[in-house]
Amino acid sequence: MGKNILILAVIVIASYLVGVESAKSRGKNYGDLRHQIERLWTSPDARKARRRMRKKLRKSAGRARKAVLGS
Image (cartoon, rainbow, N blue to C red; front, side, top):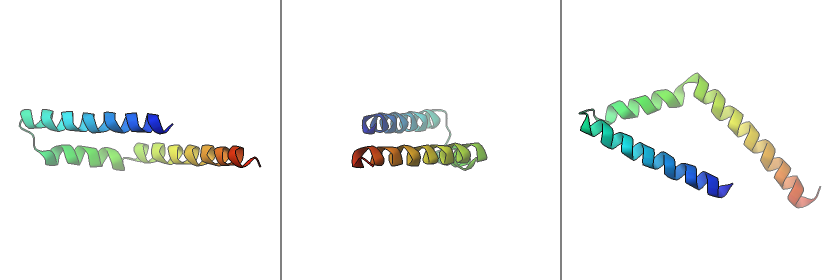
């Protein structure tokens, strides 16, 4: 699971850097891209998705903890 998160982080960072370079070549500035990212981050759908993922993660962490401790 940790390897998957690392791969995802690398993909996100690479996508961000490509997007910034693409925006620069089209004459857009960093502020426009930052505004779009902030808008996506604060959208209600994104918040719900993050909340669901957090809930699933906590559940699976609890199950893993029980399996390791043998309870």
